[in-house]
Length: 103
Length: 283
Image (cartoon, rainbow over all chains, first blue to last red; front, side, top):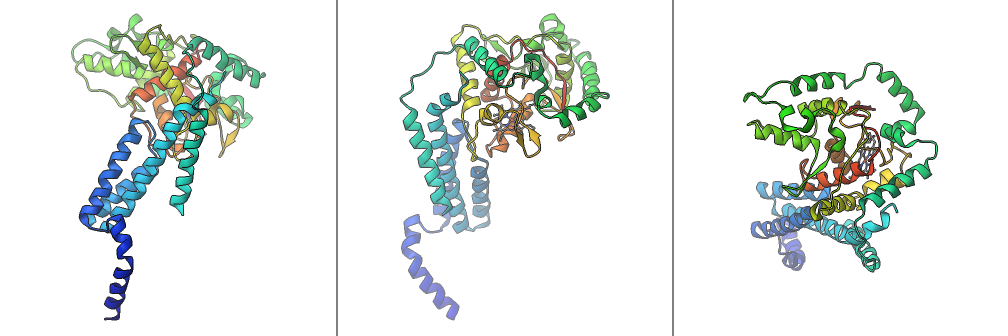
């Protein structure tokens, strides 16, 4: 009883946050996974994928398959963030690499 | 917290990027690049003669060099070499053989690879040429990293022993673009650790990294394929690329990707004039 009450309080407290991130539901975590996949594809095209990106993406898919949508969503968001960083790195390097060239 | 740090890193990539954006694009001049590349190392390590760079780390570590001399009394690649020779000389089921696919019957030609193929507009490494030969004769491609491919490469490379590396970048827009892409790959930082090949093999060349000597980029391709004690078997140059990509927490490219073909093209071109010295052995 106390447990359910606490859970209810927690649910009310965290509701706005969850809504913002599009709370953990199968549909929302699937959306997060799809958007991570799109970023991953771009990073791959730039020859700059990080191992950690694929590890997080794999964990997201595994959690999704197990029905842990909260974990799936958070792992997918980590994967997307890491992919974005590698995309930024690769874009910056398109100009920066010349600074390292032996002349 | 981790996310904040990552975001800051991202912002710094972008900032440095925009600072450097004023630089103009440089024209492609492989010959001048190669002179500068070789000159840089010769000046930095005046005691190491040009041809000795094919021995990679052994110029920089007495203990590794001593070990090497001992190992070479019974070269660990000998088995691969013998196997490669017999595979190379075995006829395909259709009666043809590897020799039929190459100029001079495949003997003494390794110094000319990687080679630009004007028909496909792509760079062809010797390994990829071997696979093309197999496919043309109804056989499956071999894995490009180790195993029978490394054996065949060991044999073919041995028939070029001591010949000067002679990679050609013809005056063809696609060849020049491939060369330039390889150069860009070599000098671009990548992976979560934000290192380029040059970070380790130019800037830190000759230094020690966790018990390994960082081989200078000059001469780096000349002893492949090689037997590496850490692998416990033979590996090709592509296998090395994969390992070094992973070191910086980057996902490796596909063994037959344009990225690796072009990288091998650039790196081997930098070694023009150095003697072919594969197969080799490393700790």
